[in-house]
Image 1 (cartoon, rainbow, N blue to C red):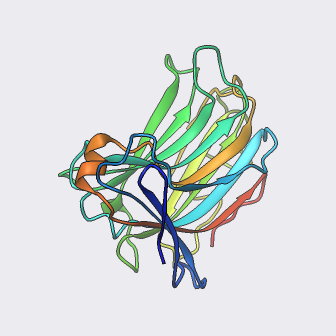
Image 2 (image 1 turned 90 degrees about the vertical axis):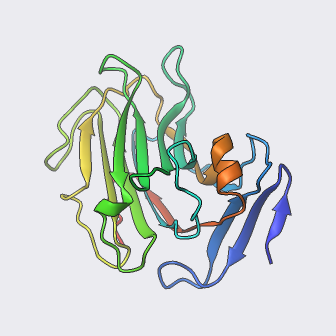
Length: 228
């Protein structure tokens, strides 16, 4: 049974899971919730990691109200203990976006070497063929440093690589959806990770309401590729 949590958010365990597991985390934010409603789980095990890899399964099919560009929610982020002066400690964030042209994942990664503070990378849902509509496997690979070599293995220097794939199909370390060189040495490394539904826009809360997002099979490592 779904259990309500303060700030009108919901966290529940549902069955079955997304990758042959017995259960899945079901999160939702009610219409009328406060902007700080955060149904999520946290991983506090990273220790200022200079290389951080993470993977999770996600089911967005319940978010039928995700139809406008101003309906956005953060589903994952990686924070450091400290960041560059004047910037947040957030190194990576992953959003789900609505839009008349189609839904998308948005990756925002800290980068102080490109004339700003971050790079933004979008992956439209329509660009990923999946065997079950709305279900995806998302993986990231973050390396601290000055903008380096990211397109061939082994990577070196500051790099961010990402995968958005069909959960039923294995992917390869050498074949990410995208890879960008970043200068992120001003962050102290991965320390805290959140997975769920948070930083929702007002239009997401009013237009998507209590529609559920499902997340499952979170895994994180320092060096090795995760995949399925």
